[in-house]
Length: 143
Picture 1 (tube, rainbow, N blue to C red):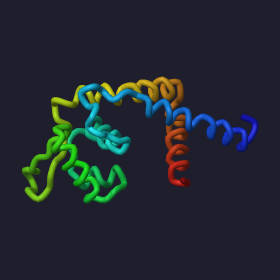
Picture 2 (picture 1 turned 45 degrees about the horizontal axis):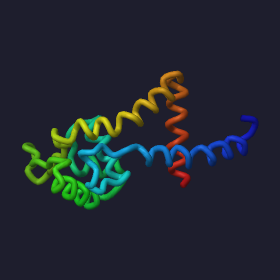
Picture 3 (picture 1 turned 135 degrees about the horizontal axis):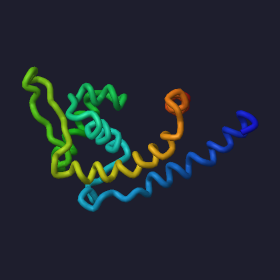
C-alpha cells in the first residue's frame, strides 16, 4: 500500500465482502429457526471460550447493560440454548453456561470463523498480531 488513502480504499472494499461472507455462514440445523442474531454469537463465544460466566461479567465483556444480557439469557434459556443456575457463593447472582445439548452445534458454528482467523494470524509474530487486533479495536471505537 502506498498511502493511507490506498489502504482505506482497500479496506472499504474488503469489509463489506467479509461481513457478507460471515453472514452467509450457515446456522447449524439444530439451531435454525431459533431466531439467533449476530449479538448471540459474541455471547456464545465468551461462554464457549471462557466457560460459565455471571450476567454482569457477560455485560461487561459485551459492552451492554446487565439488563440487556439478562433479557438475552432469559430468551436463550427458554429456547434451551443456555442454562442459568444460582451462584453457590452468592445466591443473588446467576451463572450462565451453554447447554451441553447445543454446545457442539455452537462450537461448529464458531469454528469456521476461528479457523479463518487462525490462518490469517498464525503467520504474524506476536507484535504484528497485537497491532492488528488493536487496529480493529481502534476502527470499531472510531465508528
